[in-house]
Amino acid sequence: MTYCISSQEVIKAIRAMRAVRIGIDGIDGAGKSTLAQEISGSLGLPCISLDSFLLKKMGGYVEYIDYSKLKATLEKLEGYIVEGVCLRQVLRRIQLAPAVNIYIKRVQHEFWSDEAQLDISEPVDAVLSRAREIASMFSSSPVSDLGLVEEVIRYHAEFRPHDHADVTYAVGLALATPCRDNDLEK
Image (tube, rainbow, N blue to C red; front, side, top):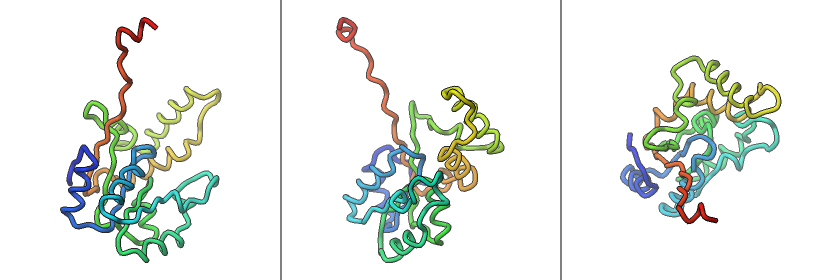
């Protein structure tokens, strides 16, 4: 596995692998679309987002992808960058696999920020129970349906995309700008 800390390192690794079918996976909001667009611009490959094939407002993700349209789109291309959450699970349903899999990890202070929820070594139901408890603390009523969060946690427990990636891209979380003395005077 190749570990990268910049998008340019990711592009360099892909070039070295001579890959033309690339998958980008990671939690929602990790930067998959941004990285896909950068790679697309550098390598001249079309960028395909799983979200484009999602049937909207259905209350889920993996179950509500237009699989026939996605498969037809990918099969007609010699090369592509495909990105989205639960990528391996979605592509398994259409029996396609990228030549190179990239996993984006959100990191802060050199630690994987989502590790407790996504690198699961205990029963997934225990992780989900904790996630529901935390979500309920910020809600006026108990949270029983975690929606996409639950899908992503279950996906990581079963498919472990972070362990099976050819390239891991560590993206730093933005830190709050520290106060300067003159900011306090305002």
